[in-house]
Length: 582
Image (cartoon, rainbow, N blue to C red; front, side, top):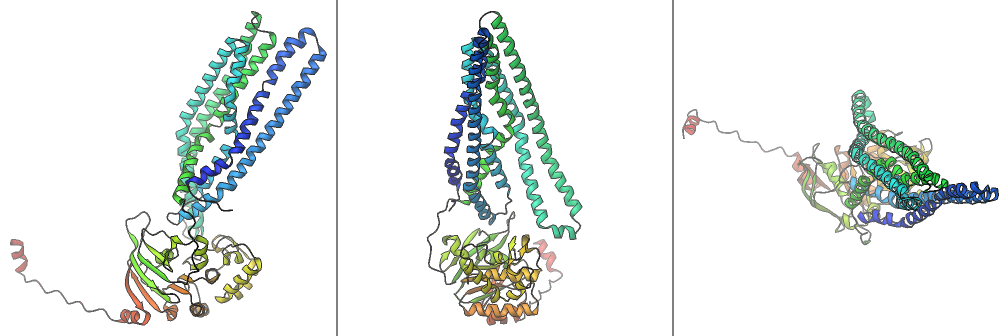
C-alpha cells in the first residue's frame, strides 16, 4: 500500500479514522444516558419501594438497574475497543509516511526520531482518557438539566460547581502549559544528543570522553526533568484541589438536598440522586484536568508532524522513464556546508558518457565525498542539478532511481540485519531471484568466500553500522550491495580505503568487469592503484574543478613542475619615503 507524504497525509489519516471517533462518541452518549440509572434507582427505591415496603418492586428495580449497569459496561468495553482500533489504524496509516518523511528530509538536515515519538504521544492522546473526557463533556448539561428538574437550587449549585471546576482546569492549563512545552523541547534535545553519543560510542570510550559526556547528558536530563517537575507539581496541585472540591460539593449537595427534603420541597430519594448527578456532571471536567498534560502537548505534536510532512512535500510520483544507460551530467552543482556560509562544492559541472570510468582526486577537504553523495542524491544541492540520461534525479521515481544506482560511501553504513538483507538492500519479493542476485553481486566483488566464512554465511546477523565485521569486510559487503541488480551508474567513495593488496587487486578486476558490462563508474580515490582502470580524471580543489580530462593528459599536467615564480624587485631605500610623502 502506498502512503503519500505531505501536509494532506496527516489530515487524511485522521479523516480515515473519523468513523471510529464518531462511533466512540455515539457509545459515549449511550453510556452517559445509562449513567442516569443510579440516580433513577435511588429515586425509585426511596420514593416508591421503601415507603410501600414493596419487596417485589425493589427486586424489579434492582434487576432493571443491574441490567442497565451491565449494558453500560458492555458499551464502555465496545467504546474502548473502537478507540484501540482507531489507534492501530492511525499508526498503520501515518507511521509509514512520517518515517518516510524523516528519511527524505534527513538528506538535507540530519534528524532524530523525535517526530515519531511525538506522533505516538498524539495518537495516545487521541485515543486515550483525554478524548473520552471530551466525549463525555457535552453530556454535563444533561445532568444539569436533571438537577434543575429536581429543584432549581440544586441546578444552581451544580452550575456553580461546574464553573469552579472549569476555572481550576483553565488555571491548571495556564500554569503548566509553558513548562510542559519547555520540558518536551528539552527532552527532544536530550534524546537527539544521546543518539549522537551512542552512535560514536567507540570513539567516546577510546578518547575517554565518557565522564564529560555523562555529565552533559545528566545536565540535559536535569533541565528537562526540572521543567517536567514544575509542570507535574502544578498539575498535581490542581488535580488534588479539583478532587477535594468535587468530594466537598458532592457532600454539600447531600446537605442541600436534605434541607430541601426537610422543607418538603423534594422527596427523600432526590437527596441521593442530586448528589450522584452532581458528581457525574463534574467528572468530565475532573478527567480533563487530569489529562491536561497530554492535551496540552497534543497540539504542538500535531504541528510538528504536520510541518515535517509539509517539508517532505506532496510531490506526485514521477513518470517512469526508460531504463537508464548511465549517462551522467552535473550542471553548476553547489552544496553548502551545514550551519555555515561556506560551500563544499561550488559550481561543479562535467559530463560523463555511458560506460566511462571517472576518477576523482584532490586533497582532503576538497569536496570529493560531497560530490559522490550529490551525484547519487544522498545530499541536497543548494544550486545546480545532477542528470542521469538527461533527467534530473528528482524526475526519476525513487525505486527506479535506486535500482539504477550503486553507491559505496566512505563509511560502509551497513544496517542492522543479515548480510543477505544488506546486500539486497532489504528488498522483498521472489526469494529465489533475490538470493541468486545477492550471490552474483558478492561473487562479482570477491566477497562470496568471505561471506561463507562468517558464522551463518549470508544469514549472519549484523549489528548497527555493521557491528561484527572488520572495516575491510564491511567495505567488501557494502561493495556487493552497490553492485546488486547491475546498476547503470556506480559511485564508489574510496573503495580501497580498507583493502589489503589482494583486496585491491580484486577491486581492480571488479571495476574492469563493470566497465566491460557498460556501466558508468565514478571512483573517489586517495590511493592511486585504482586509477589504472579510469578513462577520465577530475581534480577537485576547494570545491571547484581544477582539472578534468583524459586520464593520461591530466596525470601529465599534474606531473609537470610548477612554473617558477619571479622574485619581486627590491624597493630602493628612498622609494618608500617618497611614496609616503606623496
